[in-house]
Length: 317
Image (tube, rainbow, N blue to C red):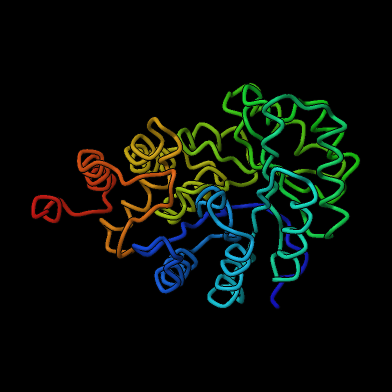
């Protein structure tokens, strides 16, 4: 199976969505089309599956295996696949990691265990990552949550993890505040063995990228991978005028995608793809529920403002 050499997580990595049928089963045809659509974007480094954006918390182990298999069949020869590892316990996390490695994933995105919301110690975090690292030699991406959730890793814990688990090669940074985010960028990317910071601050992406992130990993890429790739390139070449122009197009969508409640962010992205004619339906699994007509209309207006949907199509709806 394609493994794309020793992939180092960097650059623009969209996290795709997972379409469902009306009976809540996986819409494999819709998923294949969505994968091909996103993967055709110029300037991508990889694609992420089995993550928040694919409603991984509502997917069984076998469904996650199937999602990876479909992604390999459709785009695995073109782009590396980052597979999420979502589990409350370390033993199950290691089992998912082994499955992903056997299935041809090129890197793993490690979600923090839910029990950490009750408090964690550096020893707990290390034990979790070491068990996963013992299960596979794939590069690991640490999903850094806000510290206030209890699932974020304090600076000293993060540095200890990076020091003692050499396969940690990047973090998906959702720290949620600028000083901590900048500290991650300055500290981790300057280590003797650099750890790339992949921002997921999609609600303020331009502000985040100008601090010097070496990549971005975002569910918004399921809808606007092209705009994200162009923005990342513009920042890299210091073309601030172009970056601002692109950000002006992204802003209306960021405003509607990341409104409260945040749990609906990917629900909204599905509705956006339906409005754009790229998905046949926007079905989500419980506990998520169908969005209201008023909210869908706000998404439609944002797509028009971003230049992705013609005004005449909006007026005809």
